Length: 496
Image: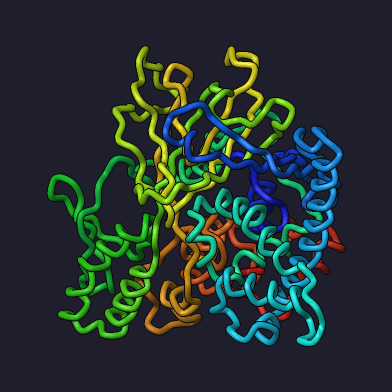
């Protein structure tokens, strides 16, 4: 990942520090713009930058877009918008604070089942007319604009969700992210390190254990249970008809793959009388049905003309919301003949059409373009990484394309309970799940670390806060003020 917000990733930060990786704090500035429908249809791109945020997690004053200087009335509108955003942001911090400490349900009534839209509508109604006999304030409409045009694009980019996905996400996840991030920086790996360095450092302890401790390029087709004279084992059916007996299995795959593998295990558990484990596997399979994915496209390129606002409005991260014309087009990515590229692939002379998402009334992605200052050796002074493009990118300027799937936040906390065995389960569970979706909150890299740590703790029978693997998990929680701000009596089922 390119960067992450400090307060929401304490376990990831602790792991990186344990690996000896330095972190570089960043204070990204953001631009918020819209693209009108004719740009989507391929005509001249029309953009409107309506807000600029100078970063520092809300602690800095935003600049105004270039259009604000076009006339006194335009500047007055920009100043009024800044004031309304400031008030709305303060309100958002207040409700995020209530949510963090578990009292948002007392204010709203729906508790953890309230969606982001539920909370926005409720808060906007209160702001618009706090007392029935008083005149309307206009603050409610301002808060709705703030939620739709500032907060929604941010979370659409963070979670690579459509606008409908963001509105329907349980508010508890989004508000937790906001509260945890107050006063923190974004971070990137320092000293020129990359994800490849992280992978090598994580694999080193396994490599030291000797040969046959890790197998790559081997497909597992099925899992069966077998009771032997020496105990309970799981049999993995591998390529070529080979079998491999193991004591435990941790499935760290997309939810659909995990569910299919569990489906091959359940019958043998029932046949051999492992009723408790069979029930738990059935519960895991049922919970996995609730995990939903969205396809994501990331294009690395140098095409500034297609995906950036007016030069004076360009910032580190540039977010675009597409204005949909209501013609009912699908939000599936466009058909293309673009080959999948890796960092070591040679760029073909002709890539063909690049994929992009055509916005539809019920599914609009936020297009996010991050300005990356590439190493001098790359030959490119500035590289752009655009996530979920909503307009075509010049194929002659494309350096690489990645397609992946991202899990959406879970709608119900009961689903999360189904992923994990109860503490101290007897007999000991045989199979475990790890992944971003198997941890509270928005499915991000923190969830991968958190769910993996949970699995290790479950297998080893450890308590809630041990130094698993020699890692000091407390070191990622920040200084005293940060820990006080992010303290809460009851967690979300994870380690925070």
